[in-house]
Every structure is written in structure tokens, then in C-alpha cells.
Image (cartoon, each protein chain N blue to C red):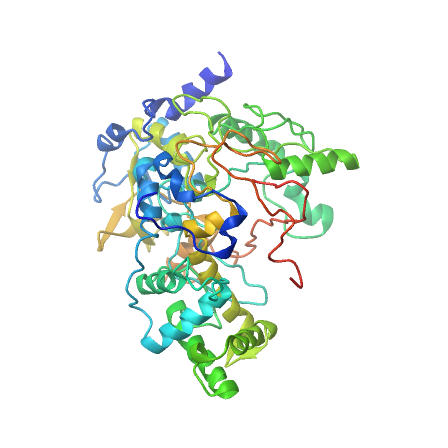
Length: 347
Length: 215
């Protein structure tokens, strides 16, 4: 069985999209299974982004009765997205947030997603693996905290997801050397200048991995270098779970419930077990029963929901017996250097 | 394009013959609709009061370099910011030591007028341009120090975030920097240093640097 057959056998999403130049399988959405609030489903997932959608797809395939609720819309790249920055404001999570402290991190417009596909809808597509040493920075370097999992445990999952997105990039020579399913994309002006400089200084440089198909993948077309990865990919070339996992999840009997904002996780006072989620849809408060609840709402909204779910049984919020919820938040650093060059340098 | 609207700023000649809106026929309809909505007549001011409007207009035009060099405005930054504030379309966050964005705009415009009265006896909008520049430069120079009870750096961040976002949403600002705007379904084919698409125009004044220190 070839690599591509193997991917298709476990996740048919890319083959469930239309191949006629439009980007959304409307029939799949129209025929989607819909659970009633009163159904005690096996699992309700909060957030339909990078984590929630993959979980949804895997469990639907395993025969679970599972639904994912997302606060935002079920996007259609053809009609909802534009090749324009200001016109893409609605992709971001812009509910009011207050930032404080000595070095506050601006939030919202660039680091949280809203709607099915989550922040992967507007991320740049960069998908490096962690370096094996990243999992033990406290032990090795005396900074941060060690992870409770190790690189070798995660490696098979990295390999699976890199095939399903799929990822394009140079062979990665550092840490645990590995290749990617698609060849690297050609670099733009910035990348060319960087590679030239590195070569001159004798520094090894590689074209990093991005979750953007380089060549057709199922019914997804190749990248056309439109330049608006951060505004939602209208081409279906850049990966987001809207096209990489949700179609297969729907085909396997999962429900995606858009425009449904979860406000609290309910627990049984006696057993302490989760029994469902309170959510708001169309301005009405509703309650979805479930045997289990998974929270996949990104680094800000996940802790917020866990803390908002405090009860007499869990006065400090859920999963917070050790006061760890919301701590160790880090944002991605993005060092930039600017200079002047003889020729015009474009992205 | 139809309608005769053209870039009017002095730097439009940097990319001679390049007009973003000539490319509209190559854009998908949803994108074209969103962009063309910005080049029509500016919307009526709804959020700012009359005195706030004059103060904000002077401030925003200074911040975006639209200070009357050509006698004509290319980008209606005031109207764009007003409509954004009216719709409550924030970035999704605010500093704990600043009010919500709308109130922060009202408060800081009042403070700017108060400074102008103290320095020249007029509202900010009526002050001579050298005085206007001195007044806002004073806010910028305070950095994180206090300005009327607010950290000046956070005020500066509020003003410039709204000003730049509004200015660079407009196709006339793209023409000024040689940016062709939307590229779907067409895409780009000539990535790389010094390469252009057939519809792009090279920089005619590459040695002119409008932001060079001391320029």
C-alpha cells in the first residue's frame, strides 16, 4: 500500500472535497448527522480547530457518537473569505480581553481563531516538530518546565499528521532527522536573501516545513502563491481542519455544531464526572448532554472555560487541583531583521 | 477603472502607471466587493462628536502623512476609524490601564485638545501644523510615562494601530507602495528577488527612502 493510499484509508477528507473549482462539499454538511441536546452522546468536544477536529475525526471513525461545538461559523472559503487583510477581521477571536502585567501580550487579532478550522484558518502554515530536547528544558537547561511526554512517544503522531495535512519541506537535519511527504515550496524574495546570506557565512539553512500542499492532494489543488495564507486559504491548498479532518468526520457520522459558544462544563455533584456542556446558540441557552467532555479551545479560551466551570465540587475550576490551569502560557517568538538591499525584495 | 477615482498622493509616481484598481477584473467577486466598498464616497461620521471629529481628523491625517501636501486626501482615515469604532470592531484586547477603545479615543482626543489650548489657545485641529506635530511628538516621546493619567505608550499604540490599519486597508495606499493587492484566483508566478509579475511595476525611485532617519 502506497503512502497516499495509507493516508486515504485512515482519512478521506481531501477526497471528499469538490474538484470542480469550488471549495466546499455542501452536501456533506447538509446531510450531516445531528444529535439532540437530550441525547447523551459519548463525547462533546469544545472547539473545532487543530485539536478538536482531529479528535472528532478519529473518534467518529472508531464509532463514537461525538459532536464538536464551535463558537464561530462553519466557513465556506468561496463566500466567507477574501484576499484582503481588513476584510478578514471576522476570522479572529475578538471577544473583549484585558491584558496586564509588566510585558503584556496583545491578543485576539493574531493568536486565536474563531469558527470551524480554528486558528489554523489564519496561521501561516509553519509546522516544525519540537526538538527532542524541548521536552526536558528544565532538566537540561534549568528553564521552563519538563513535558510529561517525550519526543519518541509523539513521533508516530507527528508522522501521521504530517501525511494528512500534508506538510511540504526540506529534509530536516537537526534533532531527530526526518523528511516530509511533499517537496519544499520555492522561496520568495525574503527566503532567497536569507539562504544567500547563510550560504555565504557557511551556515546550513533549510526551507522549513509548511502545511501547504505542493502538488495536488486528493481533490485539493496545489498552492498558487496567492500571498494571503493568514486570511484563510481560498485555494484549499493550505491545511486547516476545515478541509483536512472535518469532511471525513462528517462522513463518519460526527456532528459539527457551529455558532455554538460553550459557557460552562457541567459536572455531577456526587460523582464529580462531566455530564455535558452549557452553550449559547441563536441567543438561547442550551445544554448538550454527554458522557464525556473534551476541551480544545486554545491556550486562552480553554483555561477560561475550565475556570468558568467552577462549582461547589470544584471551587477552583475544573482540572485545577494543583493551580496549574492558565499557567505557563507562552507565545511564539518571531524574531525579525530588516535591512536595505540593492534590488527590491518582495515576499 | 470606471468612475475616474485615482490615487492623488505625491508618491503615487513611485510606481509609474501602476493602478491597483485596474486589476479588479482579475479578482474573485467577494474580494472585489470588499475592496471596492472602500473607494466610494466616505460614510457619514457617526461615532465621533463634532469636536472629536475635527481633532481626530487632524491627528489621523498627520499620523498617516496626509497632511495636505497635495491639497487632497487619498484615504479617508477618519471615516474608516469612525465606522470601526461605531461597529465596536476592536482588536479583541485592551491594556488594563486603558479604557475600552471607544472611550479611550474620546478621552485622548479631549486630552489632545486640552494640550493644544494650553500651548496655543486653540483646539488641536486649529493649531498650526508645527504645533500639532510638537504636541503629538510630546506624547510619543513620553514613552511609558504618564500622559493625563494614561501610559503614553499605550495611547500611542491605540492611535497608530487604528491609523495604520485604516490607511493600509485602502487600495490607494497599496499603489503608493507598489502592492498589487488581492491575487485570487490569479496567484503569483514570479517569486524571488528583483522579479515582478507582468502586472506589477518596478520602483522608479529605489534610492528614495521616505522613512530614512533625518529625512
